[in-house]
Image (cartoon, rainbow, N blue to C red; front, side, top):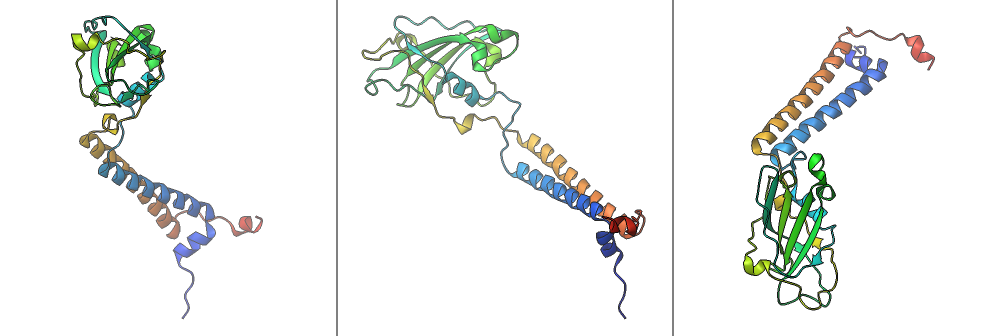
Length: 238
């Protein structure tokens, strides 16, 4: 004996808006659950942390001029100012190719040009680069400026500009001011800690499961006849 259509089938046929909403909730729930699993298994960039790659990319937009004579001593670090020397992949392409001796380059700009906002943005930042340092594509970069400018995560390796290095002057044939090239280092990208990833993953998965449960509940209520059924004549007019 042939039976009538099931309640779920009647629900799917008579309620297209409900079906579309359920499919949307199910797709969003699955996407959140999959995203939570991805966050748990992979490193995720911390968008709220200061990034050395971003700072050095801004430094690479500046023009550094060769400098001769004794280099000024680094500023004394205070609560508002700091001085740090780091080895980074800044490369200065000198006319005629690399020189046997290191060359000192310098630039002074406002902290705003390096991405700093707020009251300290107008303060000067002095940058001194000795290139090459430890290799043809590396430089020792010293930054003297507001402490708020320096990222506190994933710092590059330190380097020391001693009296001999600081006195390095202009190599003959260096030319005018140069804009260096910078290759981002993935090791300097700040990422979420394992605990933060676990918490974020848990919340995403729970949100996805909640949406899937809401989708299933709506379909179950409609199939049981608790959800109001639209009049057929309304659909006939469409």
